[in-house]
Length: 41
Image 1: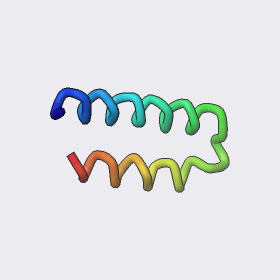
Image 2: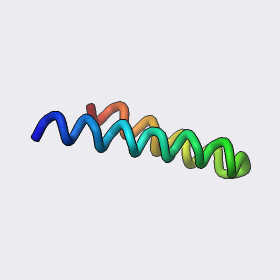
Image 3: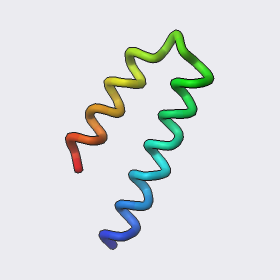
Image 4: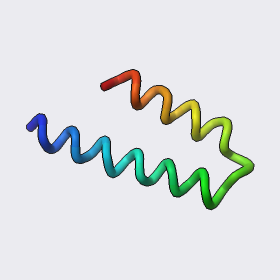
């Protein structure tokens, strides 16, 4: 289960990075989500 959770976080982070690239005007809220993600680990 722990491996699947780590894999899910990795995929989620990749999606957020792509969102930052594709939607730079939303960078502030995307960064906020990423910070919450890393603090949850």
